[in-house]
Length: 210
Image 1 (spheres, rainbow, N blue to C red):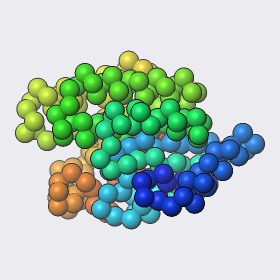
Image 2: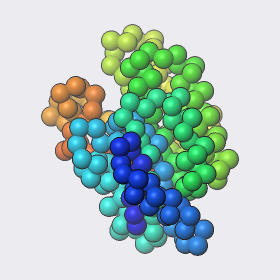
Image 3: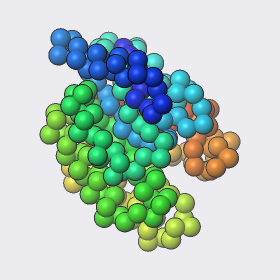
């Protein structure tokens, strides 16, 4: 099992390796898991090897079936930016499962809820049309954005999951976001010691798809 990272700034060798693995896929039984996320999945503030996606890759090493984990997460990514990148990623990697961890930057910038939901639906639809099962990871934003906006934002993930028959993790940072010992100084990004709990939050719904 191999974990590939497509994060900005990596060498061309990593991209070439990703292309080679994707090209080899039709001749193997490898299942590909594509992680499409923002800084939470891009291991912001730590090394990639410490992030929850790398922990997932190592956990899947224990799986009886081979898995290829592709991390296409970029710090600062919005739902619109990821939606624009997704078609090329689907063509290149032909994933069996797509994990969508997005929306946090939309919410922190006060983007319209309607736009967030449309982008999420579009990404799910594209992934399903490409033959992938989809897991949406729910996110929440601080209450200072107003109760109406924060509720609509929080409900967006469950709404889109229900509309598209996708799997859902209601809040990826459950048990983490309110614990200062597990959060970085910015109050937004989890620390390295929180990464296993992030994976534990995601794993039940992801395991069902795998």
